[in-house]
Length: 415
Image: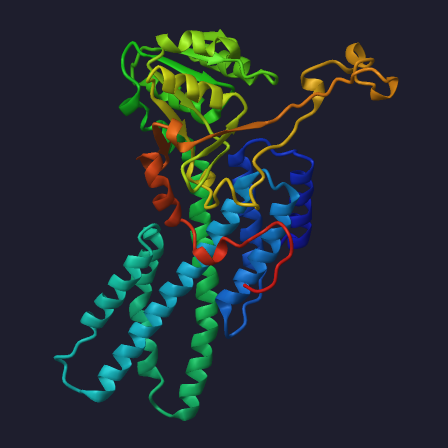
């Protein structure tokens, strides 16, 4: 087995040096690192969930602090903390169902009081809390008869009962780790396939002979548009180049290579061209709890132009980009300044940048992100379907626990 601390340190260095591009790759690697942490964590006989939560929280704080602007890291940390709590609740529900079955069998020998109603009630209670992860519920249902059978074998005497309880505690700890790791594997699979799940919905939103506008480069947008093309939709795409990095050039090249009618325009031409557009489709860096979007710089300008001309503004985002925090939260770093060399050449403008000369100095600001308020967004398309901005807070609440929103990028105490 690999050294977990070495994996964590290596990932932290990659985050600090910005060597990982894209929220999907960052989210997937975060989940894989935390899966290794859970796998090698020793679980005590009591408070198994607390031990896993503390271990994940400690590593998660290191990862968040390494690159606070990459909100996908904190999202995955909180998602896995939520998974641990949900799986522990499911096991506790199953254990209580087994206890109720034992009491019923000791009090009455009559077979009319079967264990089926008790198990069904437990299953309903667990289902109400685990509706987002059907595989975990399936595991719970499959394991209920075994957990219910444990009390029957421990009724012979005091010593055997104590041994049975200790064995049951140990097996429950192993079962908790197993279920959590299985749920994390499902999360990693969902992150890996989010492009395909979002692209499957393209045929419902893109129609014949439409004109689509996008800005910059997004793999989610690329797969979404190409999926519509594969369904025999004929449409045109305007790509704003996304200065100063000009990622739109790369997207335009990929779209043209796949047979789409593509036109590159300057960012300043968006307002002039928006009247010809039927829909704006863009990607996102993160989606906040209020439905606001942290997106590549320039998208707020596009959203304002779309609102002015009543053009739908559609945002594509995988569920790993859904952040439970609000933009005014002090834990949220909304922006990051990139190198000034992307805008100006140092050699050509070195004299203007020398403030010691006594003349007016030239300052360069190169922000990475824009914030698009929810009132400018028409629709979110995620791997779970299309949602209005006003519904995002409810969707996000299903993925996170309120107790885990305090995870920060600096050491904290408690669980």
